[in-house]
Structures are given as structure tokens and as C-alpha cells.
Length: 155
Image (cartoon, rainbow, N blue to C red):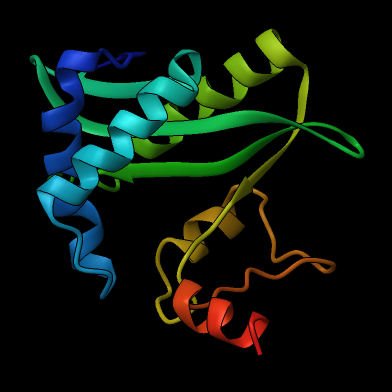
């Protein structure tokens, strides 16, 4: 297995791996088309912090985040880590995240990794806690319908 920078030609296979990974643990319902759009976005946004794990040429996982200036320094923000189900519990995610964090520190002097995970499943939160992450004491993720918000703002 090798951890290398993602290439634009990899995006379709990355999207398939992402769907296979996340559709098993969440109810989000990722389609290949939606995942392709996500990773085209990421490839344009931060290609130097976008890595894939390959086994005999097959993409088996990936990780990406953006380096964002924040009040306390540079953060790896909005991070994604995913591993194909048949390769989970083999250290692939650990190797991917290690490479991402090392590159973030070396290129941007990052000091914090931020990610979003699911509230209604034990995994991957249990894995993140095991490697030293915790729920923020100061921040929460909030969301809303753009149309509903717009309607309320116009009242």
C-alpha cells in the first residue's frame, strides 16, 4: 500500500470509495455523482493536502483538509478521512491521517485538526477519540435549510 497525492484522474475512483465507505455508516445517501462534485471541489481547493491510499493501483481510501488561518494559528479544517470497508481496521486510516497532518505541519505550520463526524453512530467517533480528538467545548456544528433561512430573513 502507498499513500500519495490524489490526481485529477483519480476522482471517479475516489468518489466510488467514498460512497462505499460512508453509505454503510450514515444515512446521508451519497451518490457517485455527488461525491465526484465534492472531490472536484476539494481537488481545486487544496490539492497539496489531498491524499489517497492505493493497493495494487486500486484506491482504497483518502483524506483531505484545507489549511485555514484561525485566531490561534493555522488549522486543518473540514477534514475528510475514508477507507473502503474491506480495508478498514488495517491501519489505512491511521496512515492517511498521519500523512495529512505531517504535510499540514510541514507546509503550513498547522496546529489543530477539525473534522465533522456523525452523532448517531459509534464509528468513526470512537476512532477519532482513540487518536486524541474530542468534542469541542466551545463550538458546535449547526445547519439549516437555505430556503427556510432566506424566508425567515425576509420577514
